[in-house]
Amino acid sequence: SYEDALAYTREFIKKWKGHPLITPVIAPHAYYTNTEKSLEDAAALAVEFDVPLHTHISETAQEAENSRRDLGMPVVPFLKKHNIFTAKVIAAHCVHIDEGEMRTMIHAGASAIHNPSSNLKLASGIAPVNRMLELGMNVGIGTDGTASNNDLDMFEEIRLASFIAKVSTGDPTALPARTALLMATRMGAQALHMGHQV
Image 1 (spheres, one colour):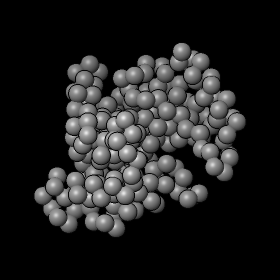
Image 2 (tube, one colour):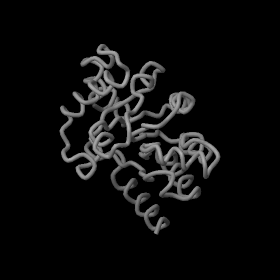
Image 3 (cartoon, helix red, strand yellow):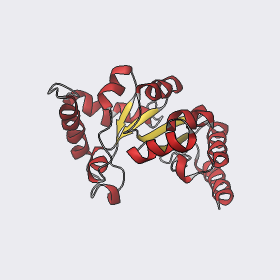
Image 4 (tube, helix red, strand yellow):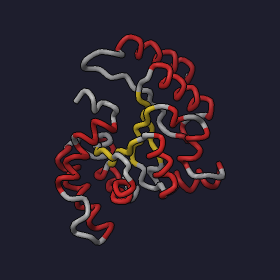
């Protein structure tokens, strides 16, 4: 149950917080696999122990459409309403967020994690990474998981992130190699709220 999982997570954090090689993170999967209460409780636990919170945000067009239809608002405002952004948020995907949502995330200090191979394989779409970066959002690069990607090759992700940005904007200078490499290294560490460690 969610209550058992939350209690387990609390004990996991107590056991591993401060370990040099293990960083505990609260991970409510997405708004649509949680209740409002479980989202709020997860955020409260993350804030209580000052650990990051990882969640999926607007990975698919259907997710974004369902949020607008069923909740009367986009995903990011819904999560904000339920205190998710009081925590140190690591937001996977963010393929279908608008500029207002980007600004909300920036204001909250949340980072997006771009998963280009997964978004291509699952036909989720192309994240507006160029616009995120232009607005000042911190964006890291991830692989998602092998089931959603077929491999965990970070060099492939760096290359694809750069190529996808170019084709989606029609600009061959978009997301240059230096920026893509930063997203996979320093900006990625900052996205994980570990920039001070690595």
